[in-house]
Image (cartoon, rainbow, N blue to C red; front, side, top):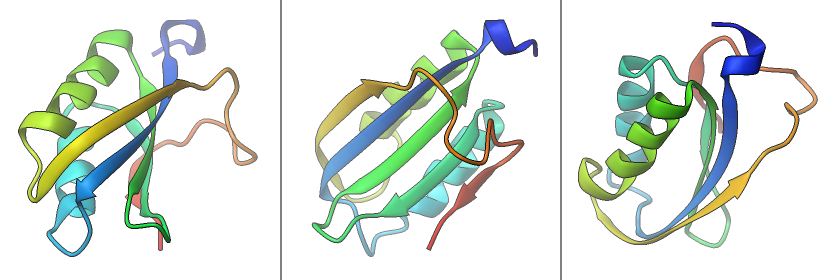
Length: 97
């Protein structure tokens, strides 16, 4: 997919989202949608997801965060990312420890 056809978003998911398989499910769903990026636990109990992909695929991931994940999602905060992180646009979706 051409770079100009991709968007990037950061999601902060709160609720009961650690210790329930949330990150691994997010990885499986993101890969099935051809979304690249990362997912990691945050010290405050939230989960952070950085997602890169086509607009429809990234939107599908956002919807899945509320409907297909284990645990209990109380809120999903979305931030637009204007440029890739230090490593550039990732070529896979992975769990970061």
